[in-house]
Figure 1 (spheres, rainbow, N blue to C red):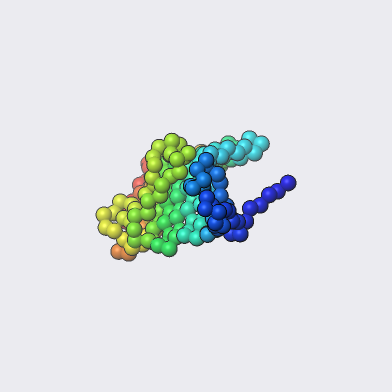
Figure 2: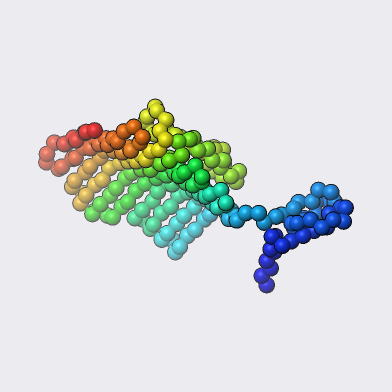
Length: 220
């Protein structure tokens, strides 16, 4: 059977025999019960998740999701894989509230293996955005702190590799190498930034052919 408690209509009798709003949980102290009141919408989910779909899709790690009247936050710290084709470590945070949007997601030690057709090894790929103009400091839930190796996650109001505070920015970066048909090999990195003060793209790449000398490309 399914039982539902509507806290918005619940009442209890306090120690003075006066009816009060809320749902009271006894604590052994009649004067100080725990009172649950419905005064805002709330969805809260956190914990360690382990998923295995026929050994094809695997996901293991921590997730914390909270949605309330103030906004939304989602934190993920996990390992994911799809058969022998794809595997990655993932850590990320997104916060949406009255200040704006802030997110920081990265995948590292990532690989995509399609046999002799393509092999892609990614040291790190990262996307960061902050439209709040403030440092956004997220308190990692205690059950996930050991997994994360820290207690807080901060999305800075200073873009990566910059020194000035920006009221908004979006930045992306990647570093790794690709092998095509076991013949063409490419390795390199790039960074991309749009901020209050500048737009900037940096690229560094090296192409390696079987017969020719390696070709390097770099630019800003």
